[in-house]
Length: 528
Image (cartoon, rainbow, N blue to C red):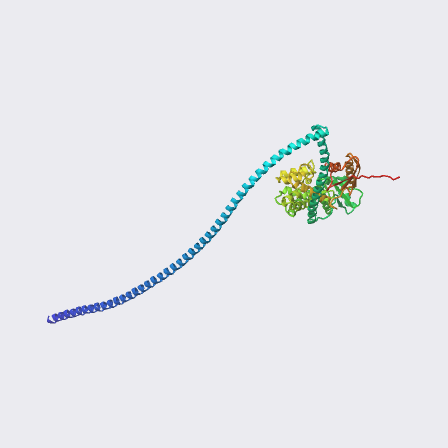
């Protein structure tokens, strides 16, 4: 029992000691942690004080920097303001000087104007006085003339009407003679000046555009290798040649000429289609109606495409834009058309360039003149299909496709069928004549040539007072000899002008015809 109590007491003491030891350990631990917290707090306070000092120092630095920058900017602004103020002051000083000068100039001008006004007033008074003196002298002169006229009438024993009639007759004869001489001088001078200017422009145009002096043949012919092939072309009882003529619309002439077949037709496109088709048939060797129709249809399409390509290339060559496909096709058709042996398409291109050169020399629109020249003969592409002359047909075609009025008038009036409504129509007419009349451009049959010369001589001889008329220089000039007893110098000019007008109205000719009228007086006397 005592042992048990002793153990209990011991245990209690052990527990108590353990509790005391635990409390002491906790106290020590608390003391240690408290000491550590104080040291950390002190370190944090020191660090915070350092950060605050750094922040204060940086803030002071920033403030000082900002103050320096503000002072620098203020100084720069002040300098700029002073510069601008000085510039404005100098400008104002210059303006003041300029205004002062202008004021002095205005004052001087005002004084000059006042002086002129005073001078004009003096001249006005002098003029009024002179007018008054002249009026009085005029009255005196009128009275003197009336008195002298009355004395002359008394001395001549004629009335005033008779004297007036005599004076008018005398003045009429003098004025008629002087007027004839003046007209002759004026017409001669104007003609020489116009001829020189026209010659200069035309020579310049011809020199700047040089074309080939060649003619195209209007005959289409196809070579036949042998007579056997000629018989195959004709076919049994002529069926092949009939089928060919029906498909192409041309006439095929096969005569005794060895190795040659001639194709005749008014339409140049049909003639070209027939020529190409016949050459291909001969190369192919299969000649029968079905093959003829098939090959002609293919060739026709190829020729139409080629015609369009030719029209496009010519428009590009002449630098004429904005043409429709139908107009380009009509232009291409002109490549197969000839006029007196001259290829119409090349003639049109030549006329276009000549028109451009002459228009630029005269200060006109060269591009518009070139367009007028290129399209002036477009009616020849359809004159086999439409009734009428090619100028009228061409004008209608161009009107249908919406061309400009100048182009339409140039095409319809380049042969004088209608009056010229713009300066481009006579330009086209002149260029057309230049292109047609140059050497080697066209061929003319002997019969037509002789008829033109005879008609020219007949026209010149149809006027009264003409003794003889001769066509010379291949019809480029007609020389007329008049009777000097029936025709005076004044009438000679009028007759020459009338002959030229009649030739223009009644004859068709390339280029121009010169009319030379000669009036010669021969005085013959014999000494016996």
